[in-house]
Length: 458
Image (cartoon, rainbow, N blue to C red):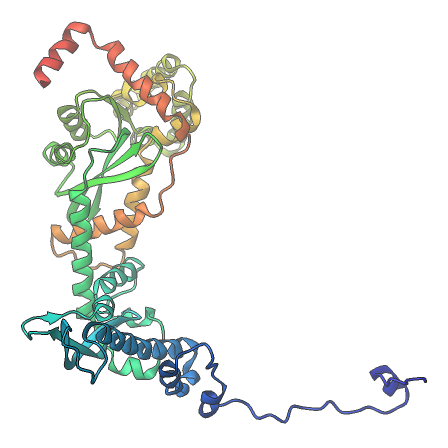
C-alpha cells in the first residue's frame, strides 16, 4: 500500500497553498492567571495568597515577586506564632506563650520601609513580649544604611535615591516610606560614622607589614592624612586617617602614633614610601624604630620640572628616570649629581630640589628589589590610587560642613577602595625584601649604637 504524504513543496508544485492555521486559544490575562498557576508544589494557603496577586503580573515579574514575598512573609509570621503559642483555638496548659493580637510594623524591602501587620506574642503569664523570629529578621534596617551608602558613593544624590531603586509595583510603592532626602541623608551619616569607627578601631596587631605609605588628601579646606600598609603577602590594608589643616609633623605623628597604639609593629625595619615632605619624614622617624625611607621618584621629578622651562624640563626628566632605573644605585646617584651640577648655575632652584633627599630616592635600588616589585614601591601610586577613589566618590559634595564630615567621606572611600584592591606587582619578592630590610638596618647600624637604642626602647 502506497502512502502519499503531501508536503509543503508538493502543495506548492500543485499550485495549492494552504493557509497556516492560527491558534484559537485566547491569550492568558490576569483574571485567568489563577487557573494557570502551578498548584501541585505549593501548600493550599500559599496558593490562595498567590492567586490574590494575579493582577500584579501586569506590572512585571519583579512586582509580582515582591507581592508574593509579602504574602509569604505574612504566612511565615503566622507559622512562627503557631510554633510559639500552639494552634489557634486549642487549649494547651503547657504552653509558654500566647497570642496577643497584632500591631503595625515595618519590614525592609527594595531599599524601602514597607508597612505590614505583625502578630504579637506574649509569655504565658502575660509579663513579657516574645519576639517573632521572622519579623525580627526582616524588620532590621541595617541593610537600608548599607544601600544608602552604596548609592551615595556611586554618586546618586539623596534627592534622586528613588531613581536607583527596583520597581516593586504600584501598590507597594504607594505605602512604602523611608526614601525621602532627609531619611537617606540620616542613614548615610550613620553608615559612614560606623565605617569611620570600624576603620579607626581595627586591631593591627596581626598585620605583618613590609611597606607603609603615607599621604594627604584635601576636601575643601580640610586635609586628611591617610596611611596604607602592604603586607608580606602583597595585600594592601587601609590603616587609618586623621584630619588636619596641613601635612604638618604634629598631625602625621598623631596618625602614626595611633597606628602604634592599635598594635602595629614599629620595632622591625619597614620600608616607608612618602612624597618627600619633611614633616612626613620627621614623624616617621619619631614613631618607628628602624624606618627605611623611600622618597617618591615621581614627586621628585615633578618638583624638579617645576623649576625648569618646558623644553629643558622634559630632557632633565628623561635623564632622571634613566638614573632611577639604573641597575647600579651608585652609578644612578652619580648621574643625578652630574645633572644637578649642570643645572646649578642656570637653574639653582632645580639643582637644590634635585639634591634634597637625593639618597632616599634611590633606597629601592640599594635594597636590590627586582624591577616588578620596584615599580610598585618606587612611588606613592598605590596610596594615591586609593585617595583618588575616595575623592571621586565625593564629587557630588558641594558643601563641606566640618572636619568630621571630611573624615566620614574619606573613610567610606577608603573602605570602598579596599574592595577594588589587588596585590602589588611582584608580591612574591616581598619576603626577599623583608630580608633585605633586616640586612640593611642591622648591617648599617653599629653594634654599640644599636644596643643603646634597644636599651632606650626597653
